Image 1: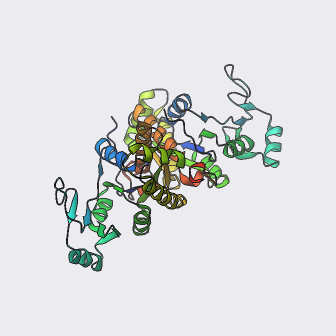
Image 2: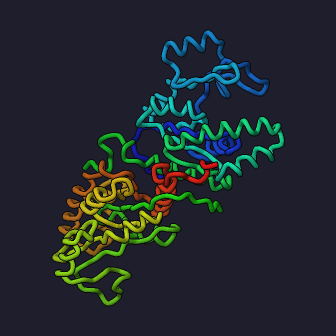
Image 3: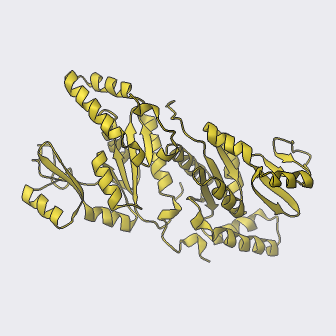
Length: 207
Length: 207
């Protein structure tokens, strides 16, 4: 193994993609199998489920506390989903970038847009999608958990999300899971060696 | 295996690096082991060695012919080395970019600079280097084929080449050969999935 690691800024990797594209599965597998990749722990106002741990799965806070965090500028992005608020704390991301650690976030198109604005030099955005809308529809149907009308709504939402593809840095066409994970690994490994992330006075060039 | 491939422009991958950094070995191994990667065949005015085939190793031409090619704008870059001229024909690169095929060139800092100017959107530049100058010196010494004065000249030249590192997209620190080859593969795989290279009207987004 090659243990040489240059001194560089950390990277905020952002994975987006419509429901059914397999994004969350890839996200979880990437965090398990890629060295030096950490999740971001979101802030939320929804109540914890029985299997969720505060500070591990989410930071659970009240509506008032959530608003205070926004007012203090402590959130890098936030959004409301089904009456609850979700947000990404800024401090852990800033720290990771400063310390050369990499974060992988699973976040929607709107969130990706906000984060890209906050970290223009340090965010790398990846859009996961099926090879076609037909495949997406088939996958949603095969889950068998939803009514045709709900599937139709998901497909409509997917169309909106995917319309923003040109804002992303990379496409992750999820045809075979193992290949997609390998490709995400390649993207992460490549980005770690971009000259633009190196700190000045990089050791090999000093004599 | 994932057989899905989007319609995209081809990429001109440029590998540079000082003598002793292992660049040529990695270049040869990459062409053998990475699918869909082709070499560029240079034009040269030097005479063919007994094991070299015209049109395979080089296109061997006269000085007059070489000048004519420059005048007609047929070379993407050229340089003189030890009294002979070397150049990269432009047409095969243009064709590769248009047809979505990828080229890997082994070329020096000056050549990389010229090619980057010719293919601002389609060139990806990679600088191979040892973890430090001390390691480079040791590798040159271990070859045992050169006088100390020649090694000193190579090191001086390496310093000049490496001073241009900020012009490159990626660093390829060649510590262990297998790791370096894997990293080059990751860079090539990642770049193939950059959204900026996709052709408009990308299939998955059409309904």
